[in-house]
Length: 238
Image 1 (cartoon, rainbow, N blue to C red):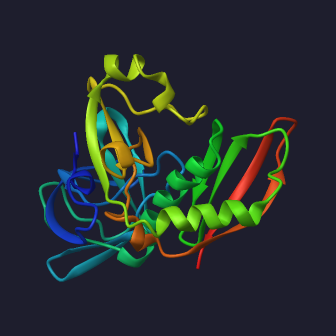
Image 2: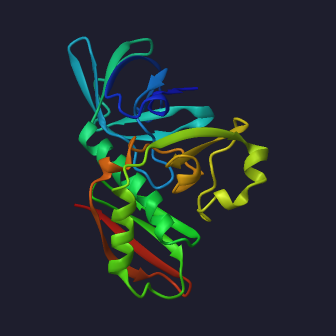
């Protein structure tokens, strides 16, 4: 199983690791990784690996079996060997924008308190699909509420509960299409705010900024009808 170092510190940009496996498709598995694998609507990280004077571009990162994280090279040539020590470096600008968008989407689910049926993140924008038969009457008011929450400079922290505790609090799960990651007996929660001033608390395995002020201002884009019961709401970083 790959140690998920992005869980311990989403801001770490560079570290050493050891190659534990090369997949049949030329993917690289490390004993520990800063690279977030595609999951929950958040894209896999990109970056580079360095060893012995060689550099390999990592195009994206995906989940493998049994907790592995697989780095997919841009070109499957000149791969490191199993046991090779490498230095991994994130494409930090891209990752940080993912963190900002992801955290902003948590707050979007606060100003639109409806069940979420889907979502996606890019470095420029994100979107959530809501169980919303009718479009919002005042998009400008929603945007103002969202930016007001962002400007509250709330800390973003993690905590863990057991599977049983989550089952006893089903209202914590906002996403109907993506279930919280299970299997270890505990589930990671992301809290925005503190105590009675908590704005949002929900299961999430992604990466987030440490404080909402890092998001910056956002604006809401188009709202698309996606079926009889659904509306897709786009959010853009400014």
